[in-house]
View: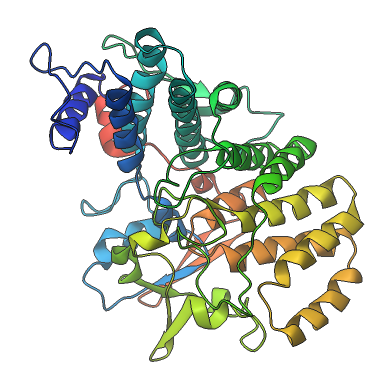
Length: 439
């Protein structure tokens, strides 16, 4: 990664073309110096707006998709799909390393400068709290893309990504361990908790962090760290603010839309148009659904000849980073881990009642109530697969659970990601390695 000089340029360039340029002074030439609350809010808004829509790239590596071999866009995703990471084709899309650090740069400006320059107020606290939360989210994505899955026994030695908390043009960026990055993520969320004072954001600005979004992120973080009680506690705190689910029996809509009752944080489109045009749903994914009782199936998929097209994502209205359905499934999973089997069954059934027909729910209710802990865990993970298809959760879920074997077939040739394959952890992009010899 280059020193932050390039981010200063990006910072200036993006602010200069924004609608906020009428009140942003450029003093001296080449540097934007925010001084007021609206100016700092503009800085953070830019950090939100440039957050990379990278989750669909991870879907290309999972068991969710097969390539559309007739698409002229396939060349951008072929090597991702077959896990050819070491020497990919020059047209292959890169995972967002620099882009996530660019968002981090904007959060650092707010965190390091706003408290010095702005008078104390609830609005200032909310702003700085959001910056801490957004930085935590960016590092969470970085560590789960380019670091090994969290393992308490090895996290202190597992290599991860550099830590950049200051605006220092001379800083040497050396990779830290998974443990160091997670400790910083938790430190940031703890700071955010002290400052964020908006319980939930109104629709239209729900790309911003709120208390419910922060608690939801904390629940996800602790789930990945296998700190079950902390994850459950955070999920319960979030659900106390927003426990709404879209009932597909009465409201047959794709529940990822930013303006649904489920929306908690809406920063990213999970399934972009380019990837939609380059892929179809895999047979394994299609077979994971009941085509007669699962109400998601006709909403999430449409047919194209013998293939299935995934209808989620693509448009800004489907921006979705966190929604309430994740809280229910996290609560169910952590309850099983804590041996609260009856609570887990009650929670997962309250979720699936909103996703299956009345007949399907009656069948599932009987089946779930008869499950032991192992079967219940598998069912909850299968519900995550069905619910969060192409939202970017599948790759991370596979990493933190079974790291199972996956086989992709392209032009008649099989490519295999073996169980616990080292390629479950991405290598740094070539341009990042070129710019930073410490990686």
